[in-house]
Length: 245
Image (cartoon, rainbow, N blue to C red):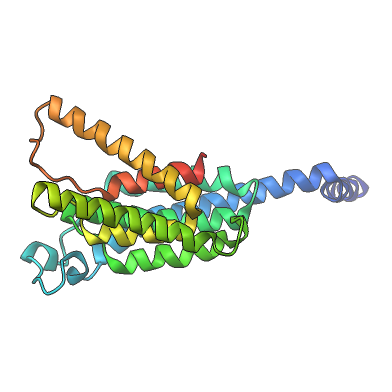
């Protein structure tokens, strides 16, 4: 009986010590990160497969029969639930060890960006509802900005640059080269990243898209006149900035 009591006393002393508290905190963070990551990865697939069909169409456009079918998976559960869950778990653990509030904000942002990237890749549309969610997640980054106006300047820079690029592209190529959804998306990213972060994401997005486009051209997978969705590149560049940089 005494030995059992001594065991629990030793455990209590270990937890109450600085080293024990630190270890317990890390274990707790890892456990919560795993749960949050799995929920985020699985829910992304489930939600995307349940999105109302008209969310995935342009305004005043009737959804296709494929989009209306409720029994057809727009994105397969296997292997994407596992892949997305592992990605969210790793991101959550990496960030939460240093700042769990920032980690939570990033997970929400990445979740919205994932839905946006898949939507743009499959249907060439960026649903406004998830752009709004992304903009709302900017609340979690307020304390990481240098000034109160930083999110405003970031949104102005991101949305303004994309709008300018779209207008220049339309003038040169005489057709739409950039959707307004991309403009709104970068405006929301600007609220999150501020002007410096937004500029960094713009540069990374340009490099990623140009590099991939060049590879596809060389491999003759696409033609020069083809238009590719920019959403996935924006999402990847933003994820890199929020998680790694």
